[in-house]
Length: 456
Ligand code: URP
Ligand code: ZN
Ligand code: ZN
Image (tube, rainbow, N blue to C red; front, side, top):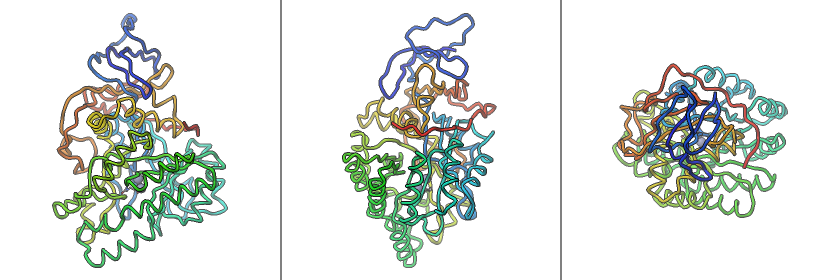
């Protein structure tokens, strides 16, 4: 098969060239390829061909108290491919009191045979004991080379500073990478209860309970641990100017810290929490949306190369029947918003409007996550020998709407936002899984990604 006439865009540069696919791999990229007899041709004149998006932060089929996220692997990965993402890395969680093996088995049960895109797992670590070392080694031997810990959610997934330090030391020993949700759990729990007891129905209390300082404290602590242990850390969903400047300083000092942000911290602000009464529950996620000055700082962070990746933290809960569990108390609103379907189109549009070169955008959406999470050059680049994960995008303005989305959730936080790019055709390992914007639902071809530990 030949994809003809597109502008091929990689992190390193662009070229108007044809792409030949043989089996599941890219066989050749060159201008004016001559088709073999009978070879299928996809007309991509006027389109961009970008490497399949990699969303390194999703929560599919995730328990939250008595409920589950509305998107499981079937619906979540269907939305992912519709939006130009061909690999996701999801957070697997062991049940309380069990080993990491429980998390791995459970997540394979949820994902295997039910995924439209390729998928890997980051393993959540919420305890430290003498058995953990064997489990961490076991995970890395089974393709799970990254781990997740929380400084928030004390009493559930959160770990103490001492355990965080020990976990980080162990992960370093096995050349893994720790991702950290950075919010000081003690401070935020106290503020939440203080505010919640006085005025539980006021959703503006959500951002007030977890202000910028709460993120900054946890980020700077993690960076110091990374420094002391001379190891790498990956800060998920960076949302504030203060956290970003801490990361920038650390990078300049040579600390190996990776910085992720999400579209909602670039495009939305905390004004949403004071508008529309309980409708504001649609935007409750952690960290919360911030001020315009934080969005602007993150944009500068992208331009200066401080931000390494843009993932979604897709964690969808229906407004009716799930978010409304917190109707009388903002503390009971399940935290999280959807986004996996919209990331690529939103970020191509945002980048163009804000003067971010297209190649840099491709690096943030695909090449960097591939390198950081041990998938490069199989993924993250359009090159001879790489997986033929290819997204063809055309310039076409359209509005984001819950009514037309694949995500299985009853709203969209970007409702009405006009994006200037539209995903047309998507290939996963050479198989066309999206044709003219429609997912081929026969093609449940996603495979588990056995990842190594190489980083950029
Ligand atoms: O609000 C969010 N982000 N929910 C998902 C879990 C997490 O903290 O990443
Ligand atoms: Zn988080
Ligand atoms: Zn998350």
